[in-house]
Picture 1 (tube, protein in one colour):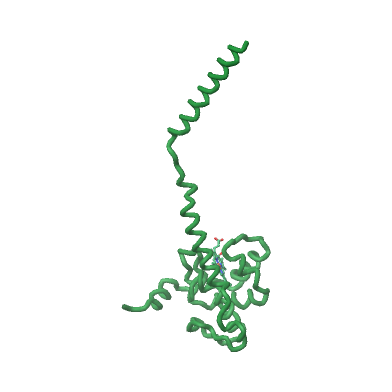
Picture 2 (tube, helix red, strand yellow; picture 1 turned 90 degrees about the vertical axis):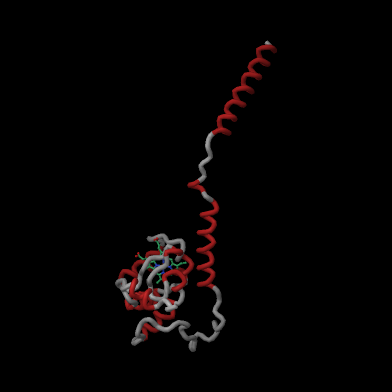
Length: 171
Ligand code: HEC
């Protein structure tokens, strides 16, 4: 009986070793789980978010705070003025002209219908549309903020290529 047990034990050991070896010789394909790639993408996104959420130096001076970039839109109504301020939070990803940024996977939204932009923001806040990148931002937006920034986005130039050309510094 003991001999049988020893024999079985040795056989099991041999089979185990064989199985382990076949695993070892299998080619490794980690392409889909490239941690480095995921990590860089994640870091880039975190950087953009940090840029957006970093406290402004003149945070106290809400009333007099000026928009740090030349307005792309004629700020002819109080709604557009308010929208322009809120849009300051969107520039890191969507660009000054709403032209979008491939590096952030952020789409071109300049000139988009105001009702569509507003609906996306409302849906992102409610969770009906999931957008991890914009989550921290929409959380801080009131329904009025969304309406105003939507009006501003709608007023941005629709012609992305022309806007980029016009706004690229000439060498
Ligand atoms: C951290 C980067 C980031 C910031 C900041 C950001 N967005 Fe986005 N936004 C994205 C990404 C990424 C998508 C694409 C989401 C998807 O794939 O569903 C998107 C999508 C959108 C869409 C939907 C476009 C479509 O065609 O469906 C709208 C509208 C939008 N953003 C508006 C804004 C507004 C307004 C702000 C500022 C209040 C803002 N975003 C700030 C990254 C950002």
